[in-house]
Amino acid sequence: MPGAAVMIMSIPQIALSILIVAGATALTRYLPFLLFPTELQTPKYVSYLGHVLPCAVIAMLIVYCLRNIPPAIWPHGLPELLSIALVVLIQIPFRNTLASIAAGTALYMVLIRTVFL
Image (cartoon, rainbow, N blue to C red; front, side):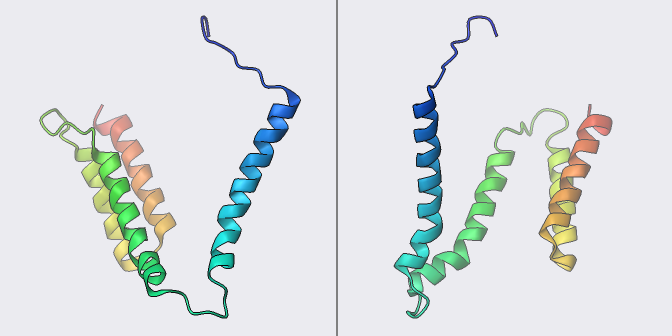
């Protein structure tokens, strides 16, 4: 790309970066087991967060994905709404997240490439 600055890292910088990323990953994996050993009962607030956070994250993802849809301009968010409806229709009876997301994504891609050009 013309005019783009290229940042070149030395071998020690690359090694240090890899060590930092590996350490941070290991810390996030091991820390819960160190803080909450299996022989002790998990605190109620941690159990509560484990119960409510997945729904909150999904809700935030939905808002994030739909934030730039102009409702006053054609197709008024129809591909997105139809895809969401398909995800819900598959998820409710089958409880298969992968199938729901795959079907919704496939429908969305077909709709924006063929129907709603």
